[in-house]
Length: 558
Image (cartoon, rainbow, N blue to C red; front, side, top):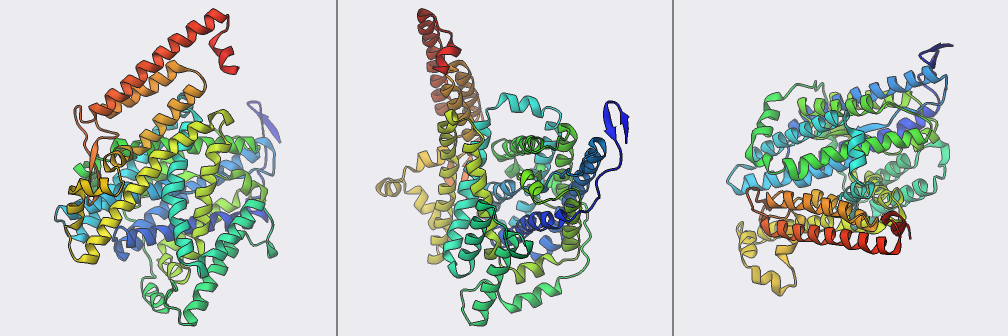
C-alpha cells in the first residue's frame, strides 16, 4: 500500500462478498416493487399500453438503474482502495418512489384527464401524459445534475424540517394511505406480508435461512394469492391466463432514444402547468434527499464526495427520460441498513444487471403476472412510514410542530384527488359523462355537505411549495427568528401572486392551475400581511429583550 496526496492507496476489497447476496435481495425486492408499481399504475391509472411499458418505459428505466449502480459500485471500490478498508458499502440506488407517485398522480394523471376532457382519444391522451412525464423526468434530472454543484448552499438555506415535512406529506398521503387501504381491501393476500414487513424491518430480527423479510413477504403473499386462485376465490389478484399473455411478450426489448417525444412533452402547454408547482420542487427534493443519504452514509463510516455522487444521480434521471422512462432515479435511504447486512460493492452490480436482464428480456410482465402487487406493496407502505417517521426523528424536537404544519397541504391534495376520482366514478356508474361538471358547478351542494371546496382547492394547488413555505416559516418562528419567518412569508407572497400556489379551480379532471399576472393576489396579500406582522414581532422582540439586557439568541434558548 502506498501514500498518494495524503491518502492511502492499495488493493480494493473483493468485488463480491457473502453479504452482497443479502444486500442484493433487499435492494432488488425494493426496486422490483417499483417496476411492478410502474406496470400496475401506468396501466390502470394512466392507460399506457403493454407495448409502451415493456418496449420503451422499462428498458429506459433499466438504462438509468444500470448506469447508476455500476458507478456507485466503482465508487465504493475506489474508496476501499484509498482507505485500505474492506467494509465499504456502495450507495444504494434505484427508482425514486416518491417521484414515481408524484409524477403519476400529480402530473401525468391530471394531464390525461384534462386531455380527455378536451376531446382527445384515450390512447392519445395516455401518450401525451407519457410525453409530459418524460419532460418531467428530464427536468428533475437536470435539476439534480445542476444541483450537485450548489447542493450544500441549498441545504443551508432551507430548514431540514421544511424539506422532510414535504416528503412526509407525499409519503403519508399518496403512498402510505393508498397502500394501507389496499391492504385491508384484500386481507387474505396482503395482511400477512404487512405483518412480516413490520415485524422484520421494525425489530431488525433475522429470518430463517438468512432470507430477508421482504423476500418472505413476497413469497407468502404470492403463495396466498395462488392458493385462493386454486380454491376458486374470484377476489384473488392472480389469474393463470395472464401468465400466458405475459409469456407472449417475452423477448428482446432494446432501449431506443425517444428525444422527439420528450421534447414534445417539454413544449406542450399542459406540461407548463406543472413545471414550477410540481417538477421544480420534486427535482429540488431529490437533490436534498440524496444529499441527506450521502450524509447518512458518512455517519455510517463511508465518506463519498458530494458533487460526483449527486451528478451521476442526475445523469441517471436524464438517461431515463432520453430512453423513455418517466421516473427519476435517486440515491436510496437506508445505507446503514445495507451495511449492517454485510453488503459491499457487489450487491450494487447484481442489482443493476438483474433489472437490465429483467427489462430488456421483457420479463417484468411475466413476474407481474406471477407475483401480485398486493404481495409486495407492504414494502412500499413501510417506505412511506419510514419517510414520515424520519421527518420527526431527523429534525430537532423543537421543530416537530413545523413538520406537522407542513403535512396539511399534502393531505388536502390527496383529499382533492379522492374527490375528483369519486366524481369520475359517479359519472361512470350513471352513464352521465358530464355529471362531475354538474356537481362542481353546484357549489351549494358542497356547502350543504360541509365541504369547503374553495379552501380545499386553494390549499391543494401547488401543495409541494406550500408545504415547504409553511414548514420553513414555522421553523423560523419556533426559533424566534421572526425576520427569517417574514422572508419565507414574502417568498410565499411572490409565488402566490403569480398563481403557482393556491390560485386555480376544480374541474372533472382535477385541480387546474391559474398561472398569470396577479391571479393569486388575494393569497399574496395574506402572505404579505403575515410578513408585516412577523417583522413587527421582530422589532417588538428585539426591543423587549434589549430592555431586559438579553440578546435574541439568549431569549430563544430560554
